[in-house]
Length: 145
Image (cartoon, rainbow, N blue to C red; front, side, top):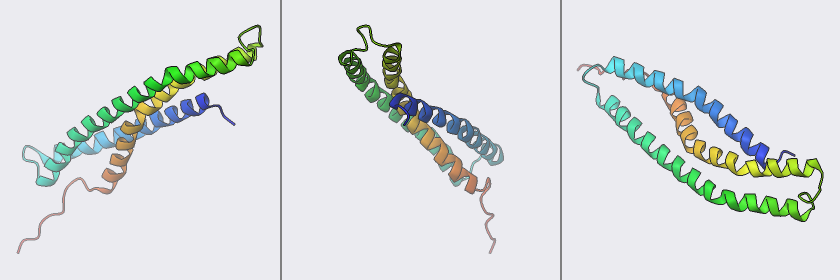
C-alpha cells in the first residue's frame, strides 16, 4: 500500500496533469467565442464572459482557503510522525530505513498543501472544459417570422 505522502504526491501530479489539459481547452474555446462575438457580444456571451471572471475569483479564494487549512494541519502531522519515529527507536541509532520513512512522512504535509490548493482550481477548469465542449461557439440563429 502506498504511503500517505506518495498518495498525496500522485494526486497532486494528477491534478496538475488534468489542469494542463483542461485549461488550454477552456482558453481556446473562450478566445474563439470572444473573437466571434466581436465588439457587441450577445447576452449569452456576456453571461459567459462575466462568469469567467467570477469563477476564477471564487476558485482562487477556495484554493487559498484550502491551502491555508492544510498548512495549519501540517506541523501537527509532522510532529506526530517525528514522535512515532522517535518512539520506535528510529532517531537513536536506528536504521537508515527509519530515517528515510521519517523524511517521507515529513514531506506529506507539503504534498497535502499543494493537493488542497490545486483541487478547487482543477475541479473548476475540468468542469468548464466538459461544459464548453458541449457548447456551440455561436448561438442558434433566430427564426424570422
